[in-house]
Amino acid sequence: MKDLDPKLVSFDACFHDGFAPQRNKEMWSPEVFHYLSKLSNDKTTYSTFSSSKIVTEGLKQNDFQAQKIKGFGNKRHMTKASRGKKRNRKNDTSKKDVAIIGAGIAGCTLAKKLIDKGHNVTIFEKNGDFDKGPSGFEALVVYPRLSAFNTPYSHFCLHSYLYSTKYYDALKTSHWNKTGVLLLDFNETTHKRFNDLLKARQDEKIFKKVSRDVASSMAGISVPNSGLYFKDAGWLNPKNFIKDLLNNSEINFILQEVKKITKTKVYIEDNEYSFDHICLCSSFESNKLIDLKGIRKKRGQITYLSKKLDIANLKIPICAEGYISPTSKDFLITGSTYSNSFSEKATLEDDLINIQKLKLITDRKVKVIGSDYGYRSTTQDHLPLVGKSKDIFINISHGSRGTTSAPISAQFICDLIDGSPPIFGKEMIKSLSPERFTE
Ligand SMILES: Cc1cc2nc3c(=O)[nH]c(=O)nc-3n(C[C@H](O)[C@H](O)[C@H](O)COP(=O)(O)OP(=O)(O)OC[C@H]3O[C@@H](n4cnc5c(N)ncnc54)[C@H](O)[C@@H]3O)c2cc1C
Image 1 (tube, rainbow, N blue to C red):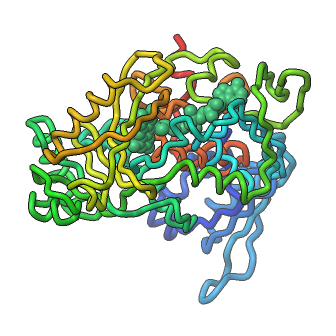
Image 2 (cartoon, rainbow, N blue to C red; image 1 turned 30 degrees about the vertical axis):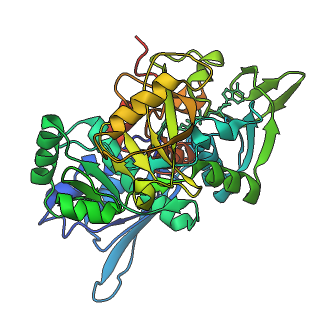
Image 3 (tube, helix red, strand yellow; image 1 turned 45 degrees about the horizontal axis):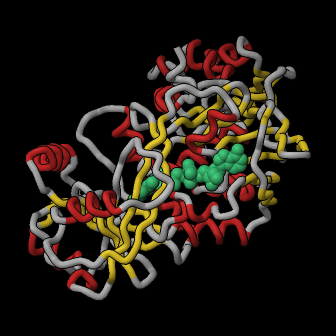
């Protein structure tokens, strides 16, 4: 309880089951009742099998009205309690009007969460071709960048991956392809990283080592190395996924660029709208609306390959230095570049970089039939900016892993807006804070 932030969490009902107070003193200490009180709201109810004086006193000293009542089952007495007096803080779960700026995967997954919770949602999107941005590619690979080290980044990667794959499964969307993903062991660094991972996690629940032959048969094409296979991973068609989210729900969609925001107002060209809350999901462009530190803009290009040659049988995404993925169209995607360039057209140079990276996956002949590019918003520590800054909710900088990190981030913002217990603990909330790069 010590680790929970009372600004973010409050209990509705508490059942205290800590054996008898005489036998298990720590569970009935004044400290426990103190934190219980801090984490309660006006309507919190409390019950326990114990009717000991320690319990009633602990409750009374912390703003509860306690009653000894007839016991349950073979207990003669038990204690129940409720809040004795009104306090200022309330657990606000009422319906809110929320504005979301940006209709990429971050904005649309958040909109869906909020609508499902009964809130009113308006999305502002400035770009009529918004499904042509990075959230509008034909395929993005959903897999985690795990490491055996105990860092906030590796925790976030693991949790967001587990959350996102279950999230897409639960939506039963046809745009989610849970094919499994293969990570090739192609150099000394991957060899060491994979070995550390295999030592740290031997249960094969998340990934398992596969030989080159097994990897080739899973992939549908011959690969040069052994690797790690993530069975619950896959690829998403974000373009159609987003279109479905926008078409099928009660989201109010406004195709306009947001020029200015305040805590509760959104300004477009010649109009202004009022909301209870505003959430920026506008990637690297969020800086035009609010001063946020630590955001970087990185260009990336993907290359489309004809499905007609030797690699036509590819069944699952394969990642090495770059990646190759199936799509639902008549081509495969390989990528991607990562640069500081701001070139506003796809370049031959970037296609060649992608083809060079692909050589670590297959030496088969490929035919380039097109390319596309987009911009990622990234940070120095590779974690997104998710939380609240200057009374505005922020959900941006999903870097190269938006399909994995957007669903859990949407859940967190939704928890904050709802006043529900947040999906992240205190440390993770700090690690994701949009203000962490501010001096
Ligand atoms: C080449 C490349 C390959 C990638 N490969 C993968 C991959 O395999 N797997 C993966 O998970 N991720 C991948 N990514 C990353 C992924 O695409 C991003 O993480 C994700 O798309 C980010 O989504 P978003 O909603 O945060 O931002 P975006 O999709 O950029 O959406 C932001 C939206 O906000 C709108 N906007 C901005 N300012 C305003 C304003 N003032 N008013 C109204 N609207 C505004 C923009 O028009 C835009 O539509 C890749 C990215 C690139 C570039």
